[in-house]
View 1 (cartoon, rainbow, N blue to C red):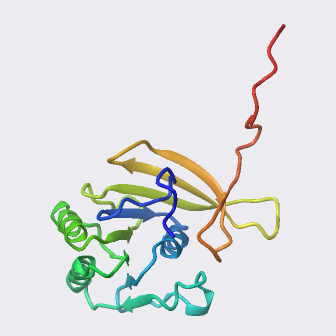
View 2 (view 1 turned 180 degrees about the vertical axis):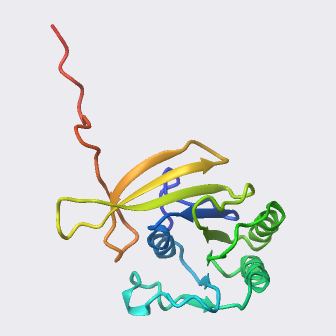
Length: 193
């Protein structure tokens, strides 16, 4: 099931996007739950943190293919080839170094050729100018003990406007609950008569 086209979290298909911040992996899992079909996650071979299959949103673990190339050159080659593979719906990559403009452009061309969406999880200020959108994803404090709040800021968007959302996502489904900002009105203000 594809989200509504007006959905602000719907990543443009056939493009490569970026996410940074402490919540970037949660954003990647959220996107994985929303993309039907095979998923590819590419991490450097020496990174000890791996997605735990039983802790992933429902249906993601069965579709996830994990690649662990050695070295940055092999990682970028792996990302490019996965983006060109037409049956893949989402490619998530975690390079350790900032992408050059040339590398970013090559990934965009591969995503277009393979009709695939890419999401590159980057370190702070390590983005590529070739990316379609860039998200800053951070956990947000909540008064409720069992709440999982996230603040996702769209800082770069080549096709539209930017924005900031605070949402509650429990990690189990592709749906989120939007959280209103403090004192935000949902009806017209009383006017002087």
